[in-house]
Length: 300
Image (cartoon, rainbow, N blue to C red; front, side):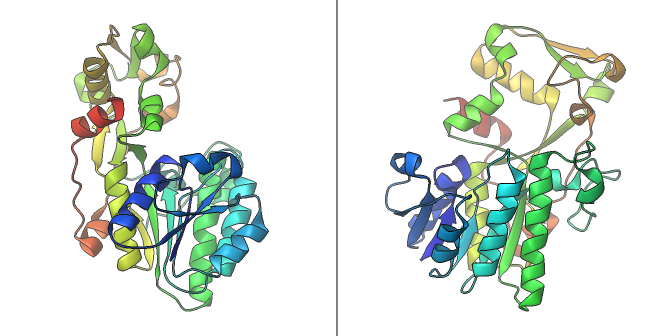
């Protein structure tokens, strides 16, 4: 029996489906108000990340833990929940879904897994890390320290980028209000040479679910970047405009002049590049879906 947190979220729902497909029993920790959203076939356990007693009890009675749940807004709750889970971790692998945000604003690309994480004490809340990323950094360290303390290697940390796929949450993440209104999309970079370097990484939620369960079955005992590929913001919005039949036009401006949110911040004028070499080598991982296929499924 595998304990799955976040089973009603986008990633958790697809992880649950993948586990069931492979014959695992799944105990899904679900908040009381979300039980009707739980995937069919799982055993529902009513609980909450803020309820450390319920977390401790369920974590001790399973043969593996997959932790996808996150408040996204309260790092204190996320960290306390992770501490409870790792201290209750007894049998089977522990798989934690983290984020590429743990690297902050890296100075060298591509970013490998051995790139130092931002020192959370210096970086949060000064701007290098969001509260969300700060929580992920702390949670990763809790798991790694516990594994070292108990001399275990049956764990994995998957650092995910933008997660998209056939789920309503992906639609809301992708379809910006300006797209709906047909307003101009302001992107950094005045020339094609400039704007083509500004982008980020993405993963299809189905690929992430598959990699998660693969790690459960063959735990690497380390952190790995998990992505399907990279995109430029220009490329992404070209696809989105076509797929949504939006009347929006893309306007490129020199980076210093950009003030419109959400593309006015330094985050969107970064040449993000990440290596997933470690994941590819460990699991012989290859993504199944192209960017356009993933975007299409996200918008259907």
